[in-house]
Image (tube, rainbow, N blue to C red; front, side, top):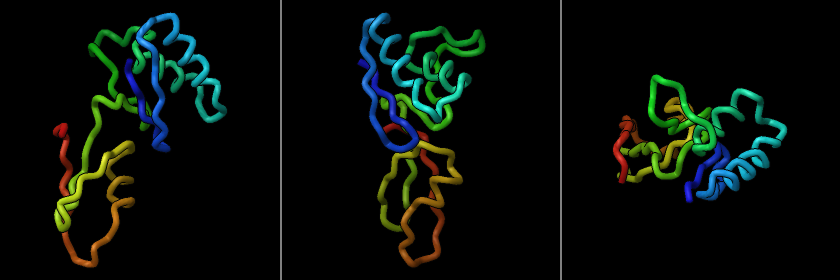
Length: 111
């Protein structure tokens, strides 16, 4: 059962059955802030619709991502890892400050 993580950190479980998955995604895309383009991308993300010929799978769509493919950010001063569900600029802005001057390094590996 795939799970997707929304930009506001809500976890949505999508059934394995294609018909049930289509119904779950249809219910999800009725939210008012989801436009037609994002709705199509979410259907691809959940495996309901096929992706374009230039890739085999969609892993992210406007901050929504498969829970099995997160991106991580490491805070160098504290060695703390944060999951990133937005672009890296927004992620750096959300990181807690430790009072020291340092750089945070992006880490695309899965842990």
